[in-house]
Length: 240
Image (cartoon, rainbow, N blue to C red; front, side, top):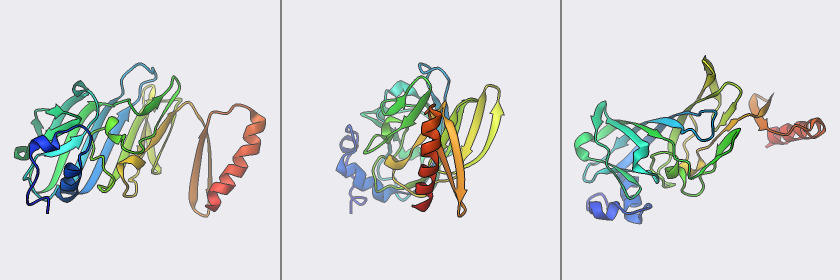
């Protein structure tokens, strides 16, 4: 068992996700829940501020907890574990958290950071994620291996004239000056590469069939194409 003989820190702290680390973490952590909040400015050049509230169970502390973050260290702003502020140690695409700051059982970790944009398709009026196969770690700190599945809750603050769509139903919205806060429900349990959202200046179409709500965002402005395409798309989607 890898947990009874954990690899050294040097083995863990390699770029990417080495097999030894992936196998160890799959036994070390469970019941992972990501709570993510992103604030999207209207200007493409402005950074996207973010907060991750991570809740998880840890079975052993024979080795440090490593979160994957394939970005510059200066994007990590603050770190708290179980309510206590910790020093940030980021090396070779990993955020290392010492066992001294953790406990066996349920832990809560809060990270303030600037969202990475290596895999964020960002344009002047919209943006969207595409994290297949292992690019979630370029967006936010996470366990970027498919066998550590998790649930996600997402809050996105975006300009008032932007739409937002994610992998769970939107629960509520509220206004904050020139911005709207979009709060989404909890997703199904899934791998990191399936996490996704889109936001921008889109038109929106919604329909409900057999208690199944459907929402489509689009940027087409040709009314003839819209009138022709929308009914067919919604009908086909509803029949899946």
